[in-house]
Amino acid sequence: VLVCAGVLVLQNRPDVQRGKFKIPYVNSKFIVPIGLIAGLIFAFTQYGKETKAFFFNSPKTVQTVNFVTSLSGDELRIVKEEIINNAKPQIILSDKVDAESYLSNLPADKYQQFISASKVSIEKKYESGWSLFKHKIPMWIFIFICITISFYCVTKNLSLIPVLGLISCLYMMCELGISNWIGFGIWLVIGLVVYFAYGFRHSKLAKENA
Image (cartoon, rainbow, N blue to C red; front, side, top):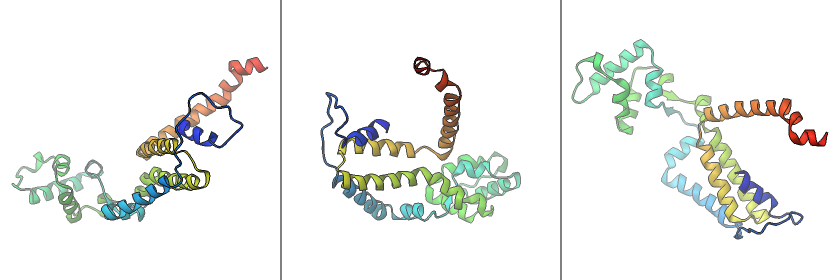
């Protein structure tokens, strides 16, 4: 990300010394904006339901593992009874029912039907509001950056190759969960505090300039 962004920043600066290696220049003025528009059209036409659910933050069915682990003892017993009643062939021994394994092996539509019909409280069955939106923050940042990059592609005639590299790397980064980014942010802050509190003043460069 830093390399591709650096190449784009230095692209239109005549005062920067150029190295021997040169990246082939292809104008991204039309390619990237058209690609962005085409991607949005494809998302809304081929995956309309999923795309609208993302943009409007529609309630989402909780994943199997999170659903089962969030249940209390009484709620888990209710779910096991529902599994026994709905299972084909019918499961007789309720103590032997592995709720997580059974629900994980259900097709997506069957799992949706089971969750919808379950008597467990709706808060345990669906994610909504902030608890759902916080997981989408990295993707929203990625979308905003893509729109910004497209604008600069048109106004600054950016080179296509580093632009594609930047977008690809940012997409892979946005696929990381919000918990990963929180952990990264904590360690980043700790590292910066240690650096500016001790490393910056005790580095070899600081001693040479003293």
